[in-house]
Image (cartoon, rainbow, N blue to C red; front, side):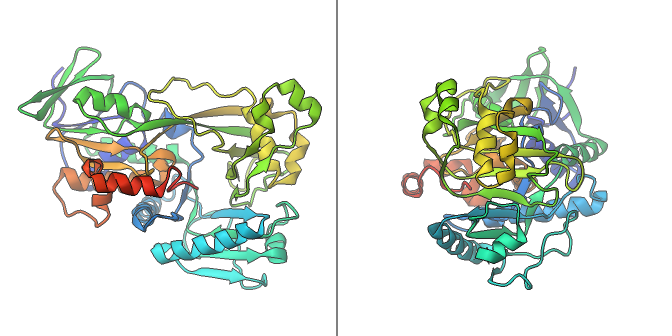
Length: 450
């Protein structure tokens, strides 16, 4: 088999597919090959909660501007495709029952508004608030709405009765990420991209420059440019190149369950309870579970959303209560056998009607994958130390929403196009700076996360 191109992209998840689309379909770059041992879009891209948001609390405006550009691109593709991937702008709704939680929402929203999210509107009466539409993404408000006390409870009566405030982030929602990836892949293949089902096992170099990729089948693909977009396989892909970046893998899982009672209403936004909590176990349940950790306080951040918009009765729950990391992935990943029940118990603090499902967490489906993360939870996009090699990875828990802009930025680097002003903040080379390393330490481990 001869080379089918001089640009090889390793990894056919959403990021790799978006890179192929950007290079071939949007810029007319010839001779692009997409390589993956699996069928495209079948690893982590298929098991996320498929949300997007322009809500990025800091430490500065880099991620807000970067992901806002990604949302621009998704809306362009939705327009072009007739919204084949059902981009929806229901919004993200952050809720709290605590007075200090209200103050935190207000302060953070003001900061993110200054980053470019849009106007913050505060409501003590319901009349001026515009609810989200069930479907679609055009002609919707931007910015965010802070609803207080009785107004919050009137607008979202299914939330816990002690809810003190909600913050509705408006340029946010969800989509069908597999359909988005499939649409980009069709366009990329139509523009000449070759898709090779094989595993990259080696990278050839001459004089410090990439010259080819060796596949597990024995095939050699000569190339002068190589893009590593390997998702949770990024650490291994970097080792093939003899490169290293400060990456870790964090397991993440969601629960899919049938909700005939409508505990997660079909018209709900993407719901997030911000308060820490203890899970509502009985003494007998705690004894039966036999895990003392389940009686401890859990961090806030449990998420819930309806799966198929206004249709069906499925819902998703996700909660990053365990942030244990690892250096290499196991596939398929193994999750706590109590994970589904933990999610139901935690989400019931926000959505009390979920108590009707207590004891039935194992009836749902728990699946997930790995977030590939940097210490400051920003991606790596740009040239690597070996000439002709580029990184497109560490997209953490925002790979679906950020892949369009990350792929556009990658294509800018590969084609020597002008770079956006946020490009420098995402370069792999940033870790060579001692000042930047000190800045990361000052920001703290949870910077950039919800």
